[in-house]
Length: 414
Ligand SMILES: Cc1ncc(COP(=O)(O)O)c(C=O)c1O
Image (cartoon, rainbow, N blue to C red):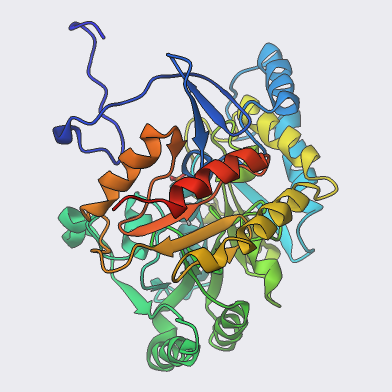
């Protein structure tokens, strides 16, 4: 780097530690290939976005075609084929209750959109008090203010605490203690359902919170109560969507259909940034009026960028027969053979997680950088969450690469 270039400030990175930053020149399948030709196995799907493997030739050719036609147009009052295609193709995977799709650019923003949609829904129905949000302990919904407020109080957001809006919390439904969570929600609703607009949950797995899993019946119960007390039920499937938990969407493992789902990461297979908030007709209809002040006031300049939409559309073609789920199953079967090698190990779909015993479990724990370095020195990218080590690779990962990851996991030297 020359001295007269701006220094890049990386996300979730403490530059004061002077740890090396690796330059990647290209990617292929499960590999990130460095400038020096090192092939690093991407064991975390590059922050959980990549599903079908890096540099997927089918998606790449689709993106190239669209790039030649147009790059960006205003999305208020205009539409284009890639967006229409995404709306049509995604519909095939969703039950009829879902009627409308609102596009945005990142997981955090599609969560903001969902929260605004829900609260605005009640506002437009002259129910202006229903603006409080319920969320789960240890949850993570992004780094914008709505996301930070709904997410767990943590080192991520401590400086901004006073700026966050109040959120009512229900406990994480630990195995065999699920009743506590359900009761807590019921208590909150009994007391102040008239003030509550929405509940937002990561279905089946709290990702950033430490890969904490919970049972599908909890969703059934929380949904039942939400309907009983008239609260919008939002599922943040930003991480879980597109196969991560073994089904196309995590909520499919329960018996419910949420009012709103948030999708991003896997929507383009991990190629380009796109997000979508999908809702039912009742929510949409609350905004439908001759009065402009009742429209949904949200946008960003690049909403539904045609090139990004093309990536999503071509990615959805590859899901046509849900074939990628076979690979998730293959990976899950591999994990099963490793379960007894680790204490506290748990698996769900493409996710394998366990804790390093007796070590500080905070995000800033001292074991984390040691683990990260150890894996990376061996050309494997794993980025533990505190003392929680997890694997969440692209679905195309080969057995040799899984073997290498698990060899390292089974032989952690500290
Ligand atoms: C469940 C969940 N919601 C929201 C987000 C935020 O997504 P993004 O990083 O694209 O803003 C994440 C990111 O990891 C996530 O896991």
